[in-house]
Image (tube, rainbow, N blue to C red; front, side):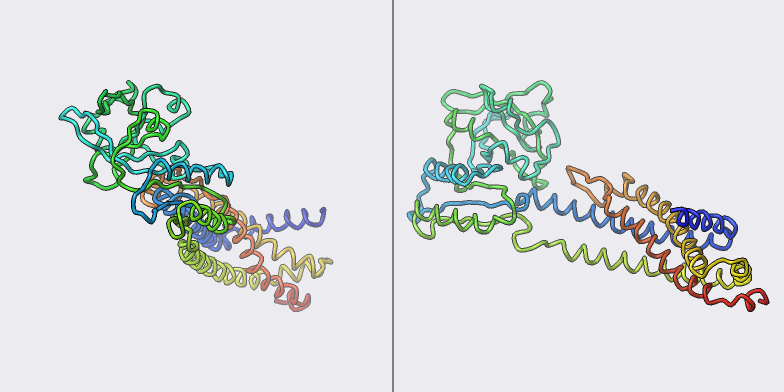
Length: 397
């Protein structure tokens, strides 16, 4: 430890003495590390943004969806729902949600209108990363409400007159006896001219007998570990086939990673760019290091004449480069963090992300590790040159 600490102190002292000569090299390394870390950080953030968008459309990896299409063509909704809910119970699925498209008539200020309504369970919000612009997703308290709770889209909210959700606004569901539903949250429109749409908990839908025209057959979405998704889907398909007949059920993965990671090419491209940036920084540092050693030949010879061993000279010269690049790497990582966490950059790269990821620790570690490795490699050749210097020739130089 004493020898290592002494070598580090000596390397730092030499850097202070030759700071003018190595300043440009360190600036180049700092900028290279900043570029490398920024590329990795922005690549990870961009990938996370695309993953979250895909999860909102098809569920998290791995989401298994079960659907039933009876051979007769007539869908007995209660029977199908009972079979799908039985799958969740029998196979012990922890995260699941019914997904059932229907229509419900609501009373708007300008008259009664039927809105497309999705019947779901509370877990749907977690599985699909539902992003709300106002209010909140269904909570256990909402499940205990005597009146049904609904989450509407922005078009629905605007047609209601943009009521304040803090006041628990009510909207009437038109039946033989009107039912007052509470608006709990607002989600963005799926497209610019989207009509009014709503979501409702399956428990409330059943309790108030709101059965309407089925727009699509009921489906069950289940979030399961990726390693068991395929065998589980096969077992569930066989199970439903035994109940409704062969070919009457479909159980499949509906998430973005069903056929492999579609973002792997992005990661490879980011890695290639980062490697090129690192290579350019290493070449620049190597050139400066070689020039620096040539200017220090006389100094190396004098140190050898006073008893410095070849190993001490070797590690001294190499550690100068390592210490310098490590410090430059710290500066580069700090600069990269400032760029990646800039609000303007995040708005451009991660637009629409509901859960903005933190600065990836992986990018910072890669930046510091790359700086250290580059320093070691760039210092290796000059260190070998310094060791091979003969004492007499060096003093005469």
